[in-house]
Length: 494
Ligand code: GLU
Image (tube, rainbow, N blue to C red):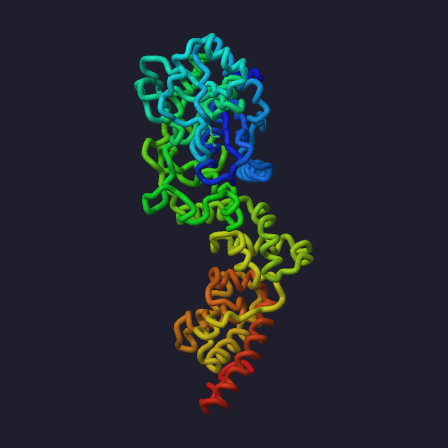
């Protein structure tokens, strides 16, 4: 074991499914707790249920943790490796009288083997008789003999909790096939791994008294327990598949960034105590304390997750954004070779549009028109802003003419030219800007147009205006043929 004096905190997932939001938050809080106090974060895969556990799920849990940045210091330990120790612990309890042999038939299939059954009479069978029956080959389980009295503990989230032991039935430790039951395995492992702090979901609250009895019967020091309230959907019901994606992998596939999910999970039932919400891992580690975990259930609000994702996209180092956007840019038609050859340009464009999408893929879509040669006109933008093609063409011709005479293509030089043109034509600036945006971007919305033109550059801007004029002239002729409407007079340019 390490010499580290800080708390030893474990995350103990069962590999029976993907890492879901609840498990990820337990892992995250445990990680923050260990890191904040300079302790040790231990990972233990609870794979004793062979039928329901799988290697594939173990791998996917490890992947999700790595993706989120939940690095453990020890492990992964596998609970199944501790089988002999679990049995030895149970036998010790049998020897010291804290457990007894139970010869009742194993529960019907479908009933929990370690669950609460009506107290059988086996606890009253004299030791030598029970031993004789076991030696004669009669199948038996080992059951814990719940002592009289009360079991209590100071929960780090819920405060003092206590149960009268008479409400706890003698519980199975080892099934008759020799397999350990969860409460035994978990206590045996936590003692062996010198875990000092157990943070887990409050669905385990009912197990805690039994586990405390086992610590006491085994003469081990109790860890601190912190039970984290459950997570609800926005409808107030327990979070489940009905609410949409619940696994970490599904959020990754939707374009949620690990730092955004990390931040979001940390705020599920915890707050820094000031008005900070957008926080990175280092800030969260620094600010975290179990004392600020709320007693009431947390509500999972997907809109907040989307919002946080956007905030992290806006704030991340631009180099990381460039790296993340590479794939999505290629998918949006920007050649890989161009991205390779012009990193500065990719960076500039992404920096301009980074605040315009909820995901990196959405940001890449905004960036693509600047970075690929071909332009695609969005049909909705054409229908809306090039509704009168002859009029739009006339304005664009004038824009092209005036822009071609400009020496510098900075936003501050472009703006007065466009505004002057609108005023000369006695139209609002929007009447010029909207058709111009469709011409250079193909879209109805974009970052501020003067920044767009500047970034697009003179050559490409003029080229696109020319291209748009061709398109608009064809539209105007088609319209004329259809309606007999004459094209608008050409005042400026050629
Ligand atoms: N393996 C248990 C689970 O996934 C957790 C056990 C514990 O944290 O004590 O629910």
